Image (cartoon, rainbow, N blue to C red; front, side, top):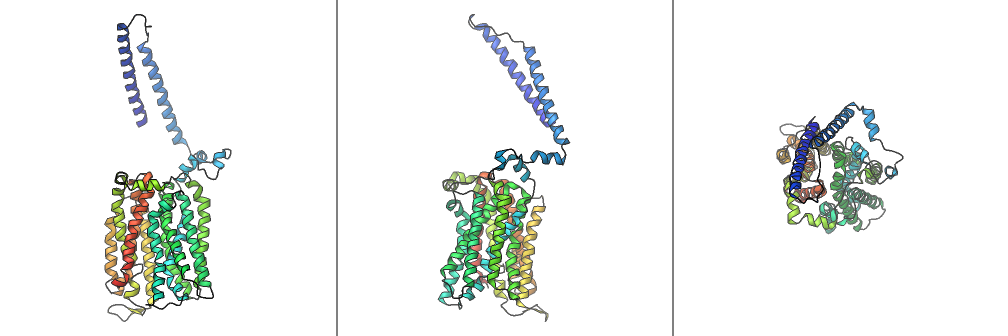
Length: 471
């Protein structure tokens, strides 16, 4: 009915304007030369013709509303179905408007596997480096140990540089193609590590540098572009994309150590990760890739332009609060995942205050990591099931509580520190994504996400370098 009222209002304005113009024209005709042909127009006829058009449009609007209300679910599906006779729809690189409407209202859960596999690779790089170090027979405090430490730091260096760098290095590729590049890069990293750890002799340290820089490029390029690809598919698909991160990490931080505890060689873990990456890539190509064809990208020139004073004023102030919040959040996450917990309580059995109860070190870390996983996944699910929106900075209180528990040297508090920090991380990550999607124009969405993750990783780098000092 709002549309009908609006149509009536527009027609009344048009009617008044046309009548006024005709009256003015007739007055001017009397003043002009006699040679001019007089215009004989009946104002009453004009009014009637306008009313007829108005009634016709109102009837059309009412019929459309009635048709929409009467359509059953099956009829709606048929309207969105793909016409197999249309060659444009059969083109694997084209997504129709009907598909686009349908995709925004459904959840593509397959995206979970793709994200899950990529973060398994990321976790394998930072969590299994001690096993790789054993392969090189490196003693702590030696020059070789420092070289190895520098080599594995390329994971974080590559990650930080490609948070923004993918917009320049891969400027010729769309976000959907950059996701393919990132998965391929991570897969190459796993292949190198599999053959390195399987070698009979001690391989060159250069392979560690190559594997870890490829992993850094893979994770740094993946996150912003995958989030950008998921955005047009709607909140349900994006939620499943975010849900894949914590399980992917915990599969390595807990699952791999349990497997090694029962005698599984670390090389099979690298190979398993590679298999998951290939499976995730196949699902992405089948279910997501073609439908993401319309997602725009920016050139290297446009990327630089967006950071100039005027364009930057459009998007950067809106992203800045979330980026700074993310930096503080990632500072705490890098310190306590599990980070300093490994050093504060050493490698011995852990006793609880005021009691003779003790817990094996590996069991303590396993429970801590499990709590971290529950908190992180729970925070993401909590936000995507809630319709309310908050500023992410409000939830930094959870990180502060977790840090306090972690450095308390009280084992009964420290074992729960990960839950609070991870809960804060899950909530802050998901809320930031939601706010950036809502407040940043689509044109600046990818650059906004890249900037947000880049600033967040500054906190990660600072925190990881303070672990030895704090512990």
